[in-house]
View (cartoon, rainbow, N blue to C red):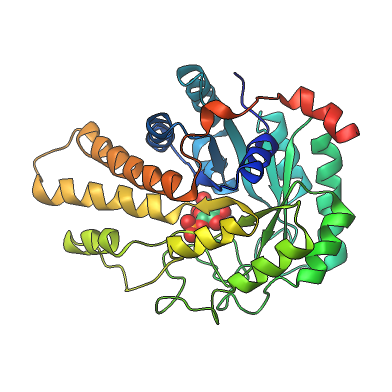
Amino acid sequence: MPLVPMRILLDHAAENSYGVAALNVNNMEQIQAIMEAAKETDSPVIIQASRGARKYTNDAYLRHLMLAAVELYPKIPIAMHQDHGNSPATCKSAIEQGFTSVMMDGSLSEDGKTPSDYAYNVKVTKEVVDAAHAVGVTVEGEIGVLGGIEDGHGAGGSGLEHVTDPAMAEKFVADTGVDALAVAIGTSHGAYKFAKKPTGDVLKMDIIEEIHRRLPNCHLVMHGSSSVPRSLVDLINKYGGKLKESYGVPVEQIQRGIKHGVRKVNVDTDNRLAITAAIRQVFSETPEKFDPRDYLGPAREMMKKVCIERMTAFGQAGNAGKIKIKTCKEMVGSYRK
Ligand code: G3H
Ligand code: 13P
Ligand code: ZN
């Protein structure tokens, strides 16, 4: 099967009350780790690439790696998603490269840092929805702004400054026609999200519940959803790393979100931690090694383990074979209706 539109994966997830991990990639080993985890758990796959990832890989390498995944895993539906598109031009270039889903993050201006206003967000998002739906590609929008700035996506601060207003979320979906909506509930990207295990005053799961009440048919997206497992942080530090103590989003809070309309769960940092932990361990325990396969192999294995855990916890495991596939071309008709 070809790369599939993300919308059909999210629709199936909604019909069957589960969530799908959206996993970031920058290289072959990460794609392999995800695909092996998906094969082992029979999970549908959302692979996403940030602008930085597209620059790092060069679109052509990424496109061909994704086509290799499609060829090697014919039974697993795979959607290829642009993470945090900063402008309609970025999203349109992703579509030209064969992405089957794009995020137009109009909650920030084109610089990826400065919060924009509602009118700007609607304008750029609607422009992307019109272009994408004309070719059956899925669109994710964002309302409210993530905290943090570690990776260049976010407005700084604790993440509570620009939490999503549920009424505005409702209006935004009506004004733009997005397939999926990212909401800001106090999370941020990267390893440093919360100073202690988050409680409801900093991780606002109640906002998700309110948005889901207002928009029961909209697929919600949680960004910054890494759990930052203590075991991985400890392993990195044991082998010479210097990560500060930090807390991520507990898996049980994500599961609570999934009960209330969250269908796409963005995870990047946990896989980065897994890769780094494995590589540090090899370097430290066997410093005589210098064949990249000797450390990239274990890194891939460690990332696969994290992916299996998330795919199982979010409920997508066991669903790959149950999804009725539609191509982007077939989606065009559904959007026209
Ligand atoms: O959106 C955040 C992801 O973790 C990607 O980060 O821009 O460093 O590739 P990145
Ligand atoms: P984490 O940094 O928590 O993994 O979040 C990733 C993300 O939201 C990508 O868009
Ligand atoms: Zn994000």
